Image 1 (spheres, rainbow, N blue to C red):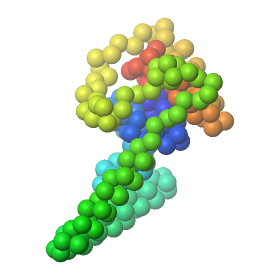
Image 2: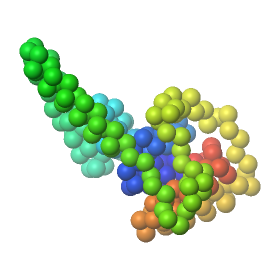
Image 3: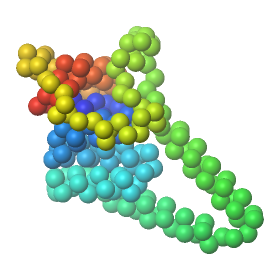
Length: 201
């Protein structure tokens, strides 16, 4: 459910929360290539190219013929090389005007990255309190949240697994219809029922 919700969050350009869910998916099922690929995409879209490349290396290792993961691994590496080259060029400049220009570019990059960390806007049919129940904690608010998550500490009641899986199927149907907010809600309900079930990754 976490990986599917990460996909829905990515579709809504909510990259920081997609990172959160992809990392939880990986905690539950480290060998799941889609979780690594979704983590890679979220990091790529946040401009965190080294972390994106690291995630895509794992995705490609687990699923070597996945052309999308291979392509994004290459793109992440190219972006990282360009970023490193720009940083090296910036470091070579020593004049006051170049420092000012560098500071301006740095502020512009920060502004661009901040704008990429967009949040989901609740739909008109869903009030704010309903939306809040479905959203994952922001990585800005709790940067260590994913690393502290231990699925083995969560008990999953067996009688809730079927209901959670049904919610997942309906979430997948909502994704197919591009009803991302609905899908997020359905996956979130499934996670409340079975936070560490066999399909919760």
